[in-house]
Length: 482
Length: 112
Image (cartoon, rainbow over all chains, first blue to last red; front, side, top):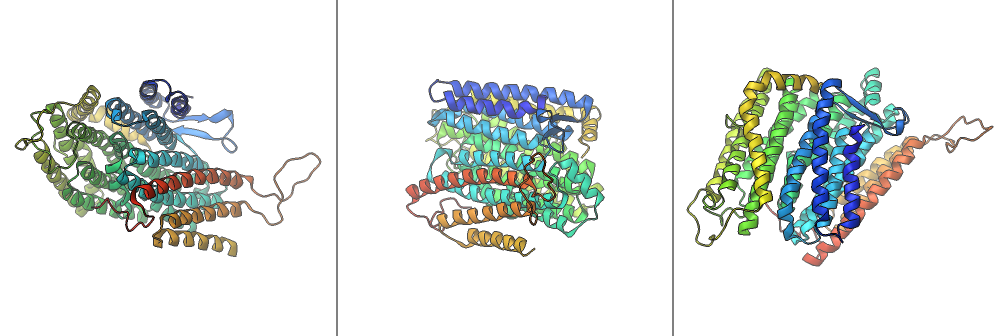
């Protein structure tokens, strides 16, 4: 029963904001923040619930599966719900300050709520066509949000993103249509059951290719990544934090995982393709990130590289690989949102994102400097922080499954990650202060609160992990049960 | 069977249009073509030769009817396609205001 509220609440909020946001001052802010707080609390409650009964099913309108539509959540889905709603809560907190520089703030909140509907819907839908509809809902609001600033660059980025995203969606829709023609059902469980009873046809390979192309475009793996740096760097920063933190993971990686591992079934060829895609994204993303001047563009390329880690973890196909991938997904969404919040703080105070023009901000913005160092080190995988453990698990999974070269390259890419983040830190925060940048102080309350929360999550998860590995992580990967 | 292949050819025509054309409006038309081919494919999946509409009525023996589900799906995708087209055309208008051209090779401020 609680599951359907993950869709209903934000849709109601979007509707109310659309009605009243224009006339009532501060209504959109408070409604959006209230909604994300409620959703985060509900996701924690669901986490508690799924611990006892393992899988939650809600039949909409009481109609039984062949005719009706179900929403389903297992361990992995609830884990994703918690991640998505946590990030959207923090993003909403700091957009209170940040979005003041834009006009028509309520449109931002309404679109953001619709994007949240789409993401939550993708996670809980138990039906392939519903997955497509929610995916489109989230994508369309994301295209509009990328163009929110209506500057020349953001319009260009949004157009590029809209075209590529629509091609991806149409590939996915064609795949769903072909699967329906083969199995005569749309429910994920029924499709899996029907496919298990039939011999593997050529059609299934074709459908796999269509889904792979579609979801890889949504997740921005390397041959399909052209839209991501543009969209991330031109969107308003709350949107970039969400896009990079949870959006590409929910629509790309989680949906891919669902479709391949629980519906079609992963073959060894598919896993090999995932491994290669992950490897290429990991390396190419890291090398491209080194060459960037723009902070947000560097973080965008870094996202491509980190998504490569997640995909390579999935490509192992073993339970430990998938668990490591899910853990890295969580860590990446935390540290990348934190980095984007820091870039927003720097941008709102100095008016620039160009790393060559910024210098010596550590003395003036100590909180931003410290939290961004923590996020960078977590991204690079330095030992006490959360990112280290997830990378370690992924590399261990690669080593156990016998992919020694992949494991070695993953370690080397991690060193590259450290290199470009240290370069960024040295340029922006820890260099001789520039005369032009005087009179700068810490950004507003929302920024500080969100970055302190995120940084403490990184530290707490990292430090507590070795003590909790047996009591939390092992049961967690048992209940992933993909 | 040939109808299915024609559908795929239409899909490929749309894809070609998207990949090769430089004008934003033509790209949007290409997107529309792909969308129509997928919609048509959905309808073809549900089609049965000499089938009738799946309307249940008293005293009638329905032996052969078309599958209604893909038609419902098709309606949904048409609505989604409409909203995407609207958004993209809106973006195209704003891009023309900013850049003064529809040529994508000249709309290149983002690089690297």
